[in-house]
Length: 161
Image (cartoon, rainbow, N blue to C red; front, top):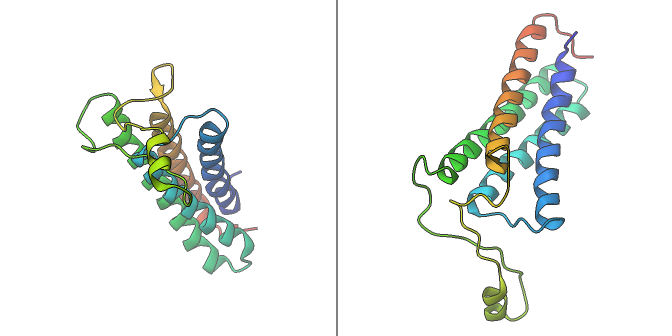
């Protein structure tokens, strides 16, 4: 039986897992993010903060809007991921420039020259033909819909325990 608290936990765990996977792929496997990849991370971070805040609140009336806001952040990241995947699959045009991450401090010119150039229109990794942005789209949008369904189903019972 789904509860709003379960929806809250899903709203916390889903973006945590997706953001954690993105960071592991970057720092563990050298898959550096492009600018649109970074755009997808910010809503996940917001969702984590919102859902964690809701988990820590005892008052149902204050927690529920935070869960809904976290869900909207997850959905936003998923929609950005869908746009990014479309750019990678050449369905539409994305950014006209590439971006890179450079380390702060030190010799700026040296940092720029040695930083990896990451294109937004090239998927650095795929599984079954689905890029990381595509997986973010599928998981985030599906997860957001599931969370909203859980909230709608159990909200009338005020079952936030």
